Image (cartoon, rainbow, N blue to C red; front, side, top):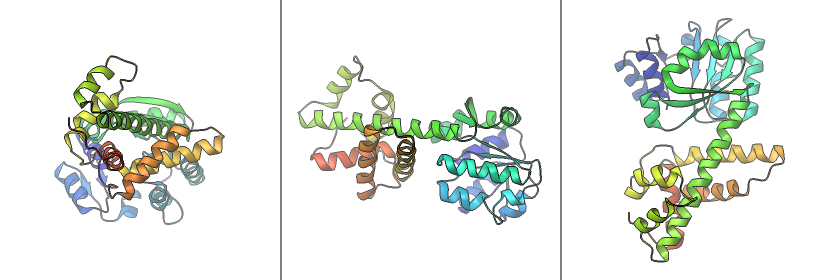
Length: 286
């Protein structure tokens, strides 16, 4: 997600310096008109706004926190826009550290797909001081088509986690229904034609599954290991809030099966589909 987001910042007229452990991503940013840094610490010392898009809490903490983190290298008054999907505690701890160093901080995890990242039409969930979000709006507008103000830092992460948990539940339920129907000798075409006339219809059936998984296209997309991580964070949050998430637990179990089957780097709906098919002895034919 980070490369197309950075590319759209360049297209929006911002001077962008990028750092990525994958040299191919850094090279692609240069080709798009950005600059490359092989020293993130040096780059941070000269930036007005630091945008991070990383895979998990551990990476976010490693990159930003502590004496060796980038927040410690930023000039006073710089703004951090942390856009990764993490637990709430990670974002709140970073807010406190940034404040202690005179650095401003907001969170802004994203929704939708890589295709929307390329098009600059992501759904952005912002949390933090309203004046800082307003300051960030020109930057956010280059990456997304809508900004949803969720509340203080931590609220946007909560919104992202319940969104991803619900997506996983809808995918899991839709896939299980199609696989069960297929084993009962119903065609995918028949099931789709009926389901679209009832309250069962959803975006997984309408878009995600027909567009990729039912065509046996398993390229990510949104990788299964990241979906599993996000649903796990949502369940952890729910336990802390003493809220049952039984459907989330079921979707998490199906994602775990997909990981066990070796699909961690593949697209999430297709991985869930293959895990369900393998345990049911059928394969969907669209």
